[in-house]
Image (tube, rainbow, N blue to C red; front, side):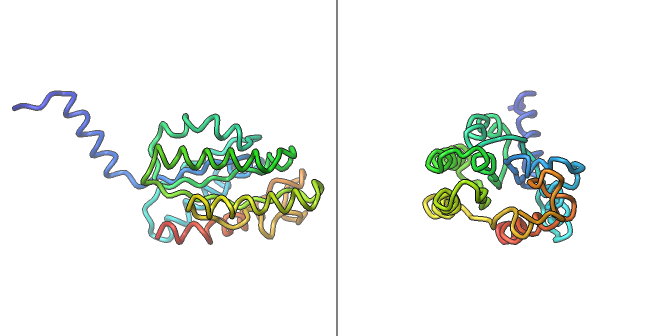
Length: 203
């Protein structure tokens, strides 16, 4: 029996997806978007170049949004889930910490994000980036904030990546004038921080 045009189109789309490299989706804040940097200098784009240099076959998509909290990531998750991806890197919490949002609230939001990704993309691998709260919110808040990320990783079985701004946060020479967002030199260190944990997932 002859195939219909619709069957042919579906077959073509399936073949295209099969031949396309697996996608890594970076969902995050302005730290992922690369605020203040040229677009190709944001750490996800630098990760793409490292992937290419390592001979790995992945395509990076940068879905960072400036000002995003864990709650707003949860709200836009349906939009992110419209497109296929094989790995998702979740970088959130920085703006929760800056706004003093209760750690329990942030943790519940991230838990829902992970749960919904697992339901919608059961084969996708999930990485959660460790984040830290500013010290001015008090020792208890800072401690609880820090511990939220490994707690979530243990509870959900996702991969915990190192603190995004390790060796960058608080170093004036590695940050832009706002003291929050890495400059070009700082972003290279951020890229290495992410690559340390992510490369093992991709190989």
